[in-house]
Image: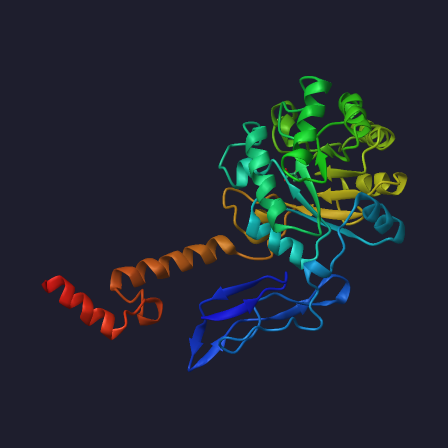
Length: 343
Ligand code: KIV
């Protein structure tokens, strides 16, 4: 058994993959944020020794915690902000270690993880459960919990209490909620209690039935003007940032220029202050559909199918587990067992 030092500083016993007597752990270098070279653990070791971190590794433990102030400063400096969703511990670790600034535990988890038709059935308990897992995996990224349907629409009191649960019970740093003018008083109330709120305008999936489906929004001048007014209002009532989903790129660019808070676009063009994607879309893990605006950076569903198929074949053939995966009993113990069984 070798020990592996991961780039979050944790060491873990890890069964080595042997290739002709050499213990191999991949440690592919790749460009990190703003040109820094990032190596994802585990690192190459010799058996029984601990590795040291690559000197250029951009480890999470070195990264300062991202705050809402840091995001505002990034906008002022013209630096783009990256946000991805995550719903579990390993994904949160990978996103955090890659150096992204924000992790959103989106209610999209209802569709991409829990298999619901849309986000409407997602409950507070489901959100908090996944937020806790993400919290355990991420240390530097700003963590935003998405308030699910009916957790903030019924009354301001309920909205405040539910927003507070994301921070108090699940370790989130902020909450996100959907909607414009109709939500302004609720947002004001939550912000007044010291809870940072991210707004969300354009295609707001919790209103899918009212919108007539998952379709682009604000494509007419009148609707675009309403969206600009909503965006200004959300800034006024204290949102620290704003998601713009599936709106024309010219409109998103205009709103981005007008607001002092950062905009995060999804299907809103490249001129927002930052971008957000659903991690399952980016990884090619959600097969039901991929929105036109999502780019697949990997094909993990196909890769999972390949791996599962290989495992299935090897189990059926009896080639897995091999001797390297089995536990040996010492000869003397084995002989002793034979004696015991004969007694
Ligand atoms: O729930 C979610 O993942 C979201 C993003 C698409 C912004 O709201």
